[in-house]
Length: 100
Image 1 (cartoon, one colour):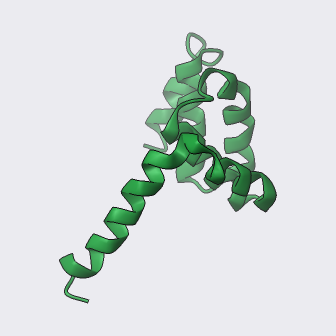
Image 2 (tube, helix red, strand yellow):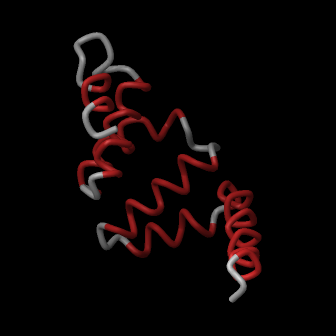
């Protein structure tokens, strides 16, 4: 992933497109370079303001860079409601799955 995503996201035909910026954000997310993640996510957030996965990842990147207040606002927004519900269900299922 860390070689394919920048090859796509950094290519001349994709670097200034939304999918290209998503690729670069994903690459930096996997590399845990969250300041770089935010550069790319900030550049496309107006296109994804109602997208649960985008907002969740944006909140994670904000928290990882120490922007806790902004992350809290993102996570408290109703737009990430579905993901929060899924994580709760998954969190409750894990002990059952692993007999803990």
